[in-house]
Length: 182
Length: 129
Image (tube, rainbow over the protein chains, first blue to last red):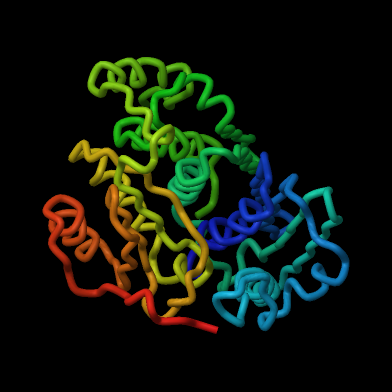
């Protein structure tokens, strides 16, 4: 994947497939420790230990339409290539936790990319799932929660171009406020 | 510097939008509207399904076509990603491959609006593993 946002979009699909009600996407930047951390936490149905072990194997997938499953393995590979690390933990009925740490300054760390568009497309295409995106930098914390947004919207569709554009700009401007790194 | 946008101002946009559209309860009667499913698995995302989906969502809204756009997993046509499945009311689902923005525009213009078939259909009798 060329952007971290695309990895997030990809990994969040697993959470949606696992019937999660809430998917949390946490990005933590620490330039001093040289860390760009991405955590994806869901409250879906989780995995047993055997499935968990196999989940990062590129030749394992729960799908029947094809024989490979590259999402988690590529995420892991990408993180490790930048001197970072990767963890996944899960228990049946208790959701799943994915943590990938990238080297912040590393040359091979993909850019964050269009994170606002990613969060919105997740919210639009999976209306039954709620998403909470938090971004922490040395300058501050930004939180975007689809539950709050939907409350404000009172049934007006999120996918209306004006609303989508406004929310995209809103996320972007707030990220600039906390001086996030691309 | 201009004020940073916040949820507080979202209300104003919401009200503007509300006056522009009549509220459509799409999801309550999905069989009467156009259904579009965009394949958004690893293969789809890597080939640009996000841009395709963004384009389809905004284009259908702009043209006020009653539609539900959702996502689906990999249908096994990884070689032809991004793929979309379009179901017109009362018709069989049709899967299109290699759907970039240009192709999506063609599908909306010709297939969704005028019911003409366009190139790039993946036949359903193709069975993967």
